[in-house]
Amino acid sequence: MNVRVLLLLLWPFDASAQGFAGLGTATDSFATPQSPAIFDFPADHGPHANYRIEWWYLTANLTDADGTPYGLQWTLFRTALAPENGTGWSSPQLWMGHAAVTTADAHYVTERLARGGIGQAGVTADPFEAWIDDWQLIGPDLNTLRMTASGPDFAYDMDLTALGPLIFHGDNGYSVKSAEGQASYYYSQPFYAIEGTLALPDGDIDVSGSAWLDREWSSQPLSDDQTGWDWFSLSLDTGKLMGFRLRQTDGTFYTSATWIKPDGQTTTYPDGTFNAEPLFIATVDGRAIPTQWRVTLPDRDVDVTIAAINDQAWMETSVPYWEGPITVTGSHNGVGYLEMTGYE
Image (cartoon, rainbow, N blue to C red):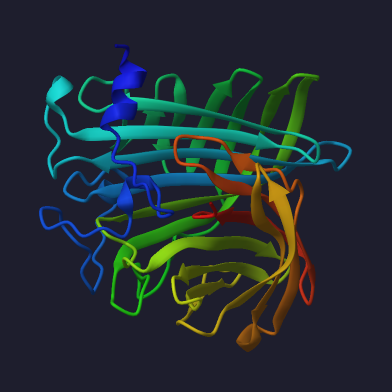
């Protein structure tokens, strides 16, 4: 049995729509986020083995010299079978990497799986390095990074420079996800300038744009009646907006948002103040997926239409989901990324 097959058998997939690592299932052996959140940098840029679920999640909106738009994703997930590091093959830490490039006409995606403890994947905080096989997100710190990944029909090599501060969501990084109080530690670096080269089937393309890194860890970030989420990261002409809605089995939603000024000052918006309403449903891999939305945040006079650059940006990975670049028009203009999970 090869290593990839073994990892698929060991991976804690959930048969429900919550998917990766059973995000809404209770566990007593792992740590849980506590308020107030207290961060220790640069150590917290690294992994937290005593929490069950964690990710380093980077998306980018890019254009070439002609203004043609592209989207890029680089994600490293960590999940644990037990709250400890372990050594060698006895390590209970499992790693999964996703990389994708999206154009108006194509969506290229690939996946890597790895076992912790044997050097195949991991993260170190100082200097910063996140890797799985030969994919890397690496730099002296989180402010200056080089990012590489490749798949059967694409590759990219990018340089990133942070032009603003870290952003802490929720209550200074303690991000509540449900009325019952499930939560995660959640911060972002949404101020990256990015440039580099995409290698696609038709040749190499020089691109530049903006990128957004999300850092999040928890052990049970969802409640058991939440079936998935719709998450928006928007870079607008007057600021940035992170907003999500968590879909619940009774047809209601739990929402949260962060408004980010150009200088990095933030305002947090609690449940019920951020709204996202589907406008168009596309058929994607046999599923009904909303790929156009009306997003409103009345306190900031935000009333915008979100549209996918490519409706078919389906991540056909071990835990499938939709992830792709979007355009923003209306009261504000801009670009961003949309992630949707739990659509069966």
